[in-house]
Length: 323
Image 1: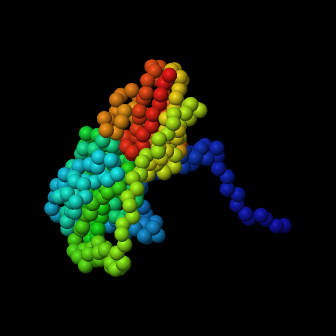
Image 2: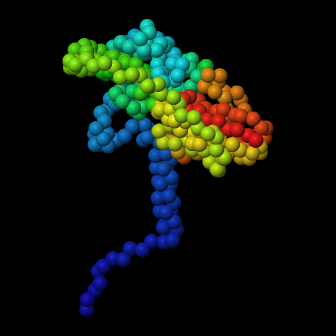
């Protein structure tokens, strides 16, 4: 006769309930601890993640351990808005002044918009364009710029040797001259001279100069409004004004009470502001800054001629005639 010596373990519903309560309590306490330390978990990446990303444990904002340098900068423009600069136009003293500093020094920028266009400010290590702005160095932005007369302050701490650039961060304004250098540390003087050195002059046979032909701005006849006025691609760069094609059509005729719509078909932000670049806004209508792909509409009820322009790119002008 055989015997089954295997043991069978059983529990009661009460004991199972107690175990479930204990497990639930552990989950609640663990969750409270985890979320209570949430700021710690997100304060820095795990060491392995940081190593994979190429970051070191010391990565972060540069520390201010040296001198403090004050720099007052003013946005200015030439009368035709073709040349933009800080403090003075090219050829005049204090044009785009170079700032020299050492690693650990801090420069405090006090910037003011003394021009008639919109501007914004920042520091970058990039030699071209308006990207790579170093956090903390910004004053306003391209989408929310300083209007004429407005001002702001920012700071830049030099973390390592090299050449940096303070610029207007509105697209196109750096290329028109709003850029200055910040030289940190013992940057090779020879290297800077080589960058600035002109190409070797090639002697050529002197020829009588061609007679100068004066370019005249094309006269655009007013046309009936057909539903939209376009701000075409490239209008944020000088040149479209030579053919009156910064707003297309340049001069439209509408009836009193008819809605007029402008479409920003450019890659840059613009405004549609009543008035003239020389006289400034007259307060009748103003789109404020609107981005690529955006539209602006206005209805004019009184007969008359309404000139308008772009506050960011003042060579852009147009006319609306209301009958």
